[in-house]
Picture 1 (cartoon, one colour):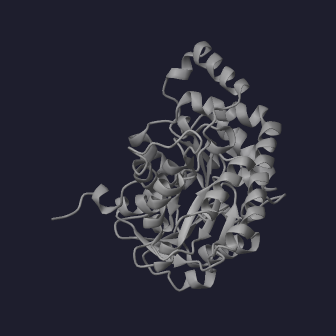
Picture 2 (picture 1 turned 30 degrees about the horizontal axis):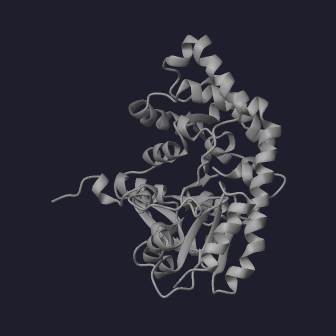
Picture 3 (picture 1 turned 180 degrees about the vertical axis):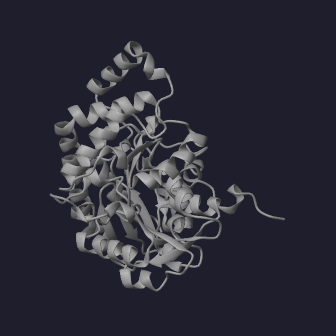
Length: 391
């Protein structure tokens, strides 16, 4: 019997992890520390919420269908900001707005692959990318990264076949946190261009990159849009997770194919979310800079706290954006460890097994900490609990 599309993949990891806390009472003096999901828990700043409310009341268009590829003003503003951020020239016809970045990835895969085609994913991978490839009937080809969590272009070259349609990178990385060096991203671009495949670069967390200046020069390359497919999300930058606003930058010809997918799934992105993304880009640059500074400070706090954990056998593999990716010292697989941490330490995190293929034993030694919602005091409590584990 043939498996259904959804039966071809695993259960959503974040939802699975949430079930681990059901029925457990956490004392008020030792509440649950939830570092399982990479999403802001605070609402957008008040000024943005007020602007959204006024838009919803004032504009009839807030409640109507819009263009499938997104509103013209938002596409133009994002094109301008990409041009500024990457020191390049990108125009609005090369931009599409989607209902979140996961939909952007799904639409792109649907537009560039056929049944049994292949896409190369560095491991540990972002699990929703893996899940969509499974459900789309596309073979994900693992590209192990090693202790530095950086993929090797030459190793990727050896995985390319006549079925390969793309290599998908995430930088700053989810789950690893690592920021891919510009020369590494360029090497993958050159490989993709040389072999006639696409390079998908998911930069959902680009607003929290610790580096100044363009993180890579791909948008500066002649004919970049014939090779590069750039994905972006407004969710993290402006706390718009519930409004589902993402984006794609690539060639108009490919976006014409993407439009077919989008029109049959959500028809168009939500109007209030698109308005919020546009208003945020036009009015919240200083606020966003402060958000970035806060995330970078929390990242520094993790680095400062690691020596105490290293003394207990932990090892930091990757750190950046919203994530710390660690190797644990215990004689048990990470999925068992993660469940025990809920009950015995009041900590909810995700095991490396959720980011790795079953045949790769490295995932059993690794865990991901999504630290963006913990301030320094909260991070201190997290480190204290991990140091004092009773096993």
